[in-house]
Length: 383
Image (cartoon, rainbow, N blue to C red; front, side, top):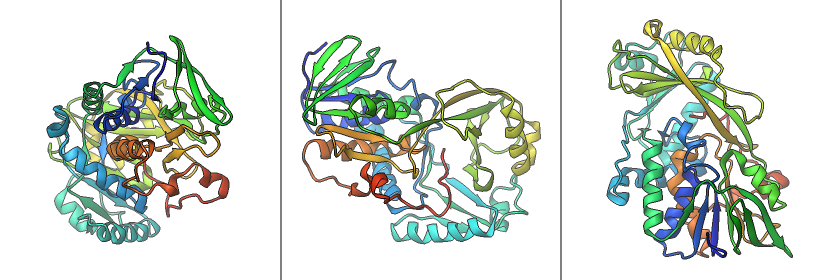
């Protein structure tokens, strides 16, 4: 392995791979990506692959819009078929408070050019008759949205990064980060030390641990989330949206011949990725409540992964103020996969001294110290 590098990326999930890809596209030399396991085997492998523009803050919408442009041309750009299924996202509002926030969100989304529809319960029932709507205030729907393959996405980014001479080392764990006089100088790994003036923390749920190595507090914690899958389920049509019952923090979509159904998210941080099959009871109750036909469904398997949560459910992007050369791309809070193209581009621009194509000043890690957290009217929904 190299003894020196110009740029080291720690973390081989979708964020690290996208940054590597975009650095390569800009002609950056001496880029090394380190992954302690296999590319994408962590949070990326366990995500639902959702891609949407229906967010409630302008910064997240701008990341969605830039990313959507890339996702829509992914195969043309990378040579890999993303499998992007544009079935749309259908958000359901139960309470008056939720409905008021949804309508305000749509005003912002329309202002930024997103064709979101506001739907009455009757319109929802007409278009998707398998849904229970008698308790709903309404819903929102956008045809631009859907889901894609995380494996295909990371493969496309890695392929492009390698083509641009990025060195990717799997099975290489970072053990320490050395700095001198407030500047990054090297990284210690299980395969030896690498000297470099620039290190990017793209370690997903391990962002806080990597930050500590550099003497930087990165306020990101891992929270277990679970997904479950049904046996083949032919009782509702194949062309269904990704349906989100916001009040119940529950969603489902088609997955092959069966269905993917969201399970609970832990309310405490941990690195536990065991599947709690007792959670199937809660999953079944939420599913049958909103889709009565799902009483016919058989939940037959599940998996657990991590959300990497920041204190305000927004990303942390930029150079750490107290450590020159240490860059953060962390805390995506359930939105990392879908925003990865824009994050990769913006971080590559920043690291190479260009003006970022999205103003990320509001996402600095310093906002937590200064008390400038990004406010959302309701707790952010996470895929």
